[in-house]
Image: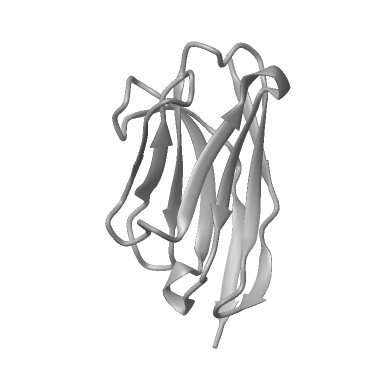
Length: 118
C-alpha cells in the first residue's frame, strides 16, 4: 500500500508561483501518477498526470502552460510547479497513483491547500 503525503501549499497572490510536493512511502516506480484538485462546492478534477519514467505528461486544458508535473523516482517524489496562479486555482490539491495514464486513482494523499488572492 502506497502512502502519499503532499506539501507546499499556501496562500499567495494572483500571478505568483508555488511548487507542490508529494512524497511516497512504498513502491511507485511502475505507477503513473497525477495531481487533482477540489475547490469548495466543486467536484475533484484531474489537472496533471505523468508516466512512470516521466516521459509523457498530460494536463487539463485549464492549466496548460501554467502547471508542470515532474517526478523523481529515486526520491519517491512527485512535484507540481504552478506558475501564473489565478484566483480560480484556489483548491485542495491531491496527488495520487493512477491506473495507467488515466484519471482513475488508486491511492490518495491527504491534500495540501492552495489559496490565491487577487
